[in-house]
Length: 241
Image (tube, rainbow, N blue to C red):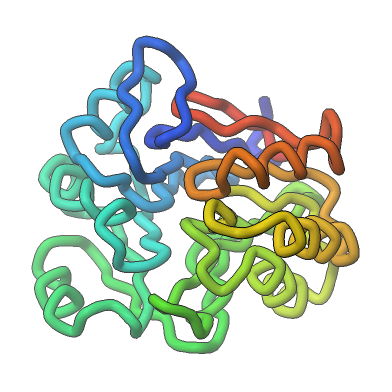
């Protein structure tokens, strides 16, 4: 595997994966892009997150950047545990996070990046979409490396299609991968179908719907994308190519 091929390992998910790992509600993934190691969200439980990472051979001390998509408990619950192990990491949040949390974080991490509504570069080949309007506000991660593009969401409260659309506008090109929670667990069949067709129309060729996507929506994406729809689940390793 070369540095030009980004790869992602799901380290926290309510979708089961490897049997030796803990499955709890929430989402987190370790992403390697070029020479940087990123932690996307932190799940709901720091002890479980660290156990899963250790079982997968991933050290919190190696994390360069922690990206928090939105302030729900199941995405920031493990933050303290990671920062206790690695207080030098950069943390990226957006302006929709509590001003008190933002103030507290300034003394607990290395650099703190607070993203507004505009896209922001976070690391080589890694950007934020900028804060999107939803309840709660959310930003997605954009990867543009090795000729491959991806949009990664925590819960996709704005809609996964809107995250992908923003990512495409930021980069000025098509997004290949859509990964993460698609927030369709309460959606009916017509709404799910609209989301599937919207991602197809945007040119997304590979999807990894997990966390809050819901069983009905995951089945719809599998039917639409076939082998290009990959299961999530804790422990899943994905080469973004």
